[in-house]
Length: 118
Image (cartoon, rainbow, N blue to C red; front, side, top):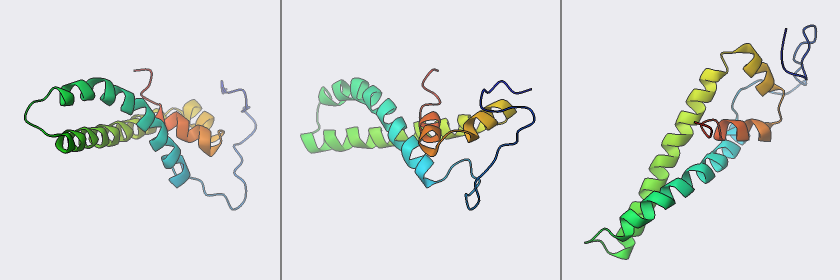
């Protein structure tokens, strides 16, 4: 019935007592934020540094603020899209059970790198 190796058709997903059943908690979001920041920062740096450096009429502090502003903006947009599309992928029962069997760190890495292959 299920393609995931850790699940069988007659074994239910067990949640330890006292554990909160949630797709995203703060530790998962923190790991996802770190992972997504690493994915987007090289892209913004690769494209943004030459554009900002050769932009005339700005001093160094303005260029730095512009770069940091773009980095934060694109990082938050990328993180939001990762969470949105990951949440949409959890509609499939196999994806949902596979996700819930992972540790919180693995879940965060999965969420933060969800758009990596696109």
